[in-house]
Length: 356
Image 1 (cartoon, helix red, strand yellow):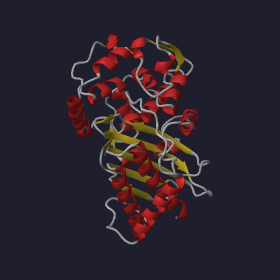
Image 2 (image 1 turned 90 degrees about the horizontal axis):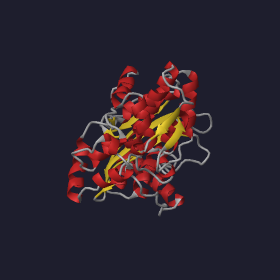
Image 3 (image 1 turned 90 degrees about the vertical axis):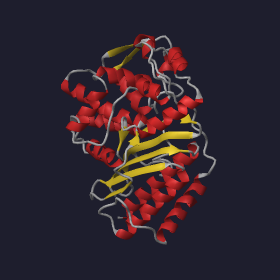
Image 4 (image 1 turned 60 degrees about the vertical axis):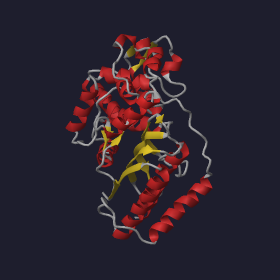
């Protein structure tokens, strides 16, 4: 999640059984017929139409705008729903940042056992148990510890420190371009993005960015926040196309973005992600291996700008792997509603590619 998100995850008001019935009803509706898919390829017409309908219904239930892309690695079969549109990433950007950091490690520019000094002005708000809570007066952590906290717990302090260490957002986007990924943009730090998200037009001096100062300057009036939300949703910066994110995930899965040791380390860390348990993982068997990275924005006036989850799913029964990117933007649904929309589509994709 990006900076400022402090609301704890709510319990599902709908039981797993009810949600599974919901998935079944979507698939049953799909079987009755629906419009031809807009941007699907290589799947059979009937199956693609079913997936299209599932996505349309999930988008409606999620009360927002849904973008999905999925690829069965072993067969090359793809499906996409709004796959070429841009969606705000929020903390999904920490995946390409992790790649950039590990590329510096591979090049010998950085070491994972290096100790990093964390100043009070480096701290960023975030989820409960964040580094900002552990180190209110600053402290030290290894580069590896920061990497793991950034990905596994989506820690915002770790992200901004590591972003500075690799040379800033432009370096991350340049790395993506060098990998042939053109539809993913990283332009701002956690702090800068949150300033924009809350409508702060004049940043305080960088060395004054303590937690107290950040809370003070981002406590903007509701009207300012509403205007800032509209601007944020229309901004191409820090966005991703679902299709492009799937292409990046495929390279990660195939260990084509880093040296072997770093590639294995990255996937291992992604498999330990603790955030977003009700999104990609939400309707899958508990033993399913999912290497993923989540992202979520604050809610402004009842509208959540972004609820995301992207990752690599190991299918049951030696059926291979699915890489999937799910983005839900501009949603008026609550936490459970948004998570369920992503979980529903993910389960439909997994079932489809398992049966293929």
